[in-house]
Amino acid sequence: MAIREEGAGVWYHRGQVFCTMRKFDEAIDCYDKALELSPDDPVLWRRKGFALIKIGRYREALACFDQALAIDPEDATAWQRKGYTLACLGWNEDAVACCDRAITLDPQHILAWQSRGWLLGVMCRYDEAVTCYEAVIRLDPDRESAAWHRERMQERKDLASLASEVLEAEEFMEVPACIRDVVAERDYGNVGLARAVLRELAGRVERGAVQRPV
Image (cartoon, rainbow, N blue to C red; front, side):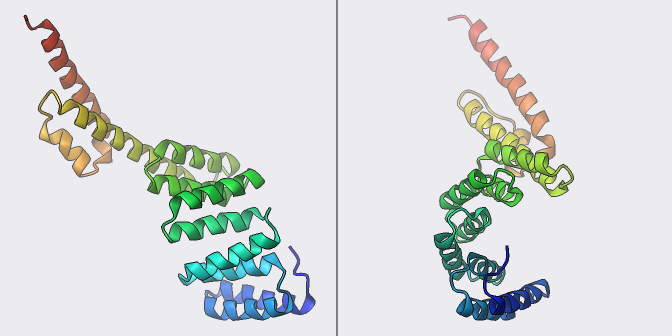
């Protein structure tokens, strides 16, 4: 998007250079100068918010994204970055809602899908997280990070299922320590084996209970 005010554009591009150099304080100064000339430009507010995120000034970043969205409520990137900022502040439900809004506005917004997947993983909503990373892969099949995260979410989902099965089984049998250790040690590589063994042992106990004379 083009900066509307020519003088503001000069400061904007200086800010961009400083961001590339990871000199975010200097970038913020440039964006502030640009905003003095063009205070109603959502791109400038969005870029300042991005620089503020990079140095951990999340509440100030949030105010910038809110300002950008007050000017342009259909800016999908501003919604995505607001969601990321809310997540950094620990407001995960609101952050997911922002990602949802970004995706509604732009279903091909890869970072919105990726942010949503990360958030849902943090919230232990692993099935939904896997779906998000699959959406990223459909949009960009070469994005190896999304494939990696999808596998991690699937592992966490399987471990959570094992933990639930262990709790259920403990109501009527002694679960072997080696199976409980898989959960306690987050031993993802042995989750499948542990679930198979637990189901076999639970099945034997249940069959024995049925066959036992009353």
